[in-house]
Length: 148
Length: 81
Image (cartoon, rainbow over all chains, first blue to last red):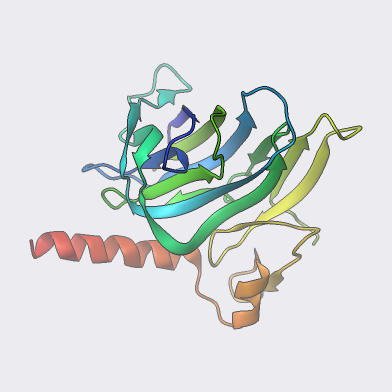
């Protein structure tokens, strides 16, 4: 299994999704084992709700190429997306991680082997990172995942 | 919870130190929950930690089974065009 890194960011748009990973026509299971959230805007006191949710279609976004952490690994078969303009088709209630943070705070979650967030090896299925930013603030996400 | 499965840290300048939590990833729904906030439960069939709502269901449906079902459904739909 190869490990990949994906960075995504968003400023104010109608959509809420900051970044996503989705299986393609050559589907693989995606196992997210680490994620970091933060805000790159000027410090202020606002509350953000961050969520990771499953989807069955990835919507419209700026393509981001996941980078292999080991340069010897092959390119990812997973599609990465950032700064969505059309929201993915989220699965109702399929929230994998939810956390409320002050805008000033940075968040990191790490799973040990066996505790990853897993999406099925099904074309266009994946997971997206959403937050509730309504103003022109930059928010950033770093995802680490494996393909299987 | 004797064996938390993950680690969560929040670095907030308003706090005197980073806030750390242990987490578990539910073996039945794959959701991440903080151990202190939601201790959840433990499945004695698959011998893994669960979130509260899955523990309340009282039955064992491992997440791996759900993944296999989703993938099988997709393969079937593609095979019939």
